[in-house]
Length: 119
Image 1 (cartoon, rainbow, N blue to C red):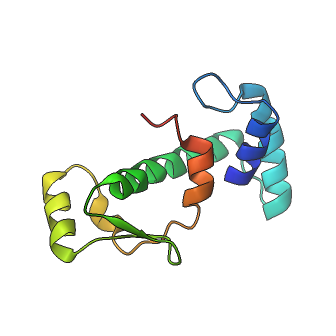
Image 2 (cartoon, rainbow, N blue to C red):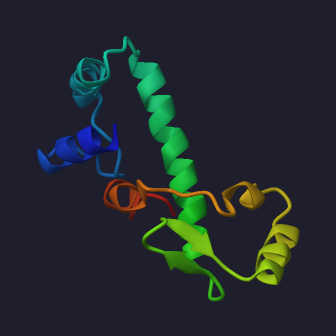
């Protein structure tokens, strides 16, 4: 999905606020369904894009923290246990505990699609 969106962006089908132009979605949905052998709707694809965007926002937030690192090979955020505990405690409404040891192999692609549109 992100690869298809990035391709559409490269073709100039990006909105001023970093989204995908409305007229580009049917082509993305069609190509994704052909590639995956599925019958997803436009709403399902947009919802998945939004889920990936939220995940990217959380991973980017963690990577931007001074005591956190990034394991490029595993595509995971790294930090000492105490640092994780402090962050999770200081952000009780965020679900950072779920991201501990969770890989995000699409991070670089998500960065190219969502960076500049998340804040």
